[in-house]
Image 1: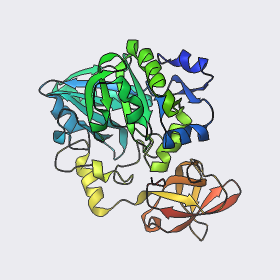
Image 2 (image 1 turned 30 degrees about the vertical axis):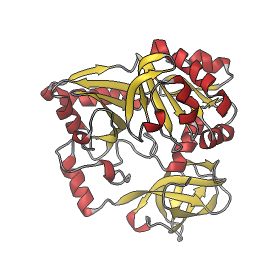
Image 3 (image 1 turned 90 degrees about the vertical axis):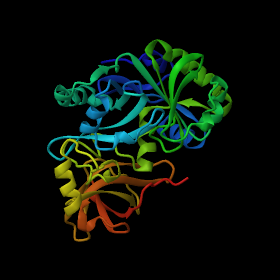
Length: 361
């Protein structure tokens, strides 16, 4: 099992460690509900150094990115980031990712930990005919996510950058926690604001310590991956491997907003046709109306008890104290306010399709 630079720090803090995407990662420290509320109300810090980072450079960098990604990366400028996905040739998704324009002709692609090798091979395949410069930095860089409504205030003392001026999905390269030239990005997967900090492995221990020190008066706590999952699910953000994968299309998954047909990209013709004719199934959000916690793989039923889909993500929402979930259902059953039933073991729990996000600030 791989370790991040902070694995021993997490162990010393009493974190419950689990194997995740080949890494030993902290799943929780004090418990998912406490950690979830810390991020929603104050500020928390996650070690997400298992994520992958690819640098794509040179005069052909944009051409390669435009070919392999669904969003229009030509809209990027230095200091901006963009959510996108890598479509495959058969209608599914290789991965979802964030693309940063670091300099002219220099882009950073941040990909999911479980897909690093798969993504690298997929992009490299298309680069054979394009010839951009590609570097896999995944083993050399660390990533901390400092998330929550108090993140700006709590972290301002350790940077000369005006953190409040960094808009959502923008970033700066500057000083942070006594380290020069780190990426301070106003991104994150919690829906409660904050930053993601990219630095070298040799620097991350110092950054982690200074972050906890600076945030002490603001109630900062280290947060595990279990709370990261409940936080993202309350926002309705897709998790690769659950809600999107090699056989779900971006159109079905509600990712049409990052699928731009103003350019040619991998499988764009087939996806454009799917958008035009409409998909056969759709990713929907539901809230359980009674007792019950939905889990991935549970059947979704119509009022006649017929299976119309499957749950892809589900949990007991710490903010709403209700069972919530995402899942794919047939299009004719996908309208908001539709009543469905979730097969939870031997019982059927009534649920209502709702509009995202579940959690509204």
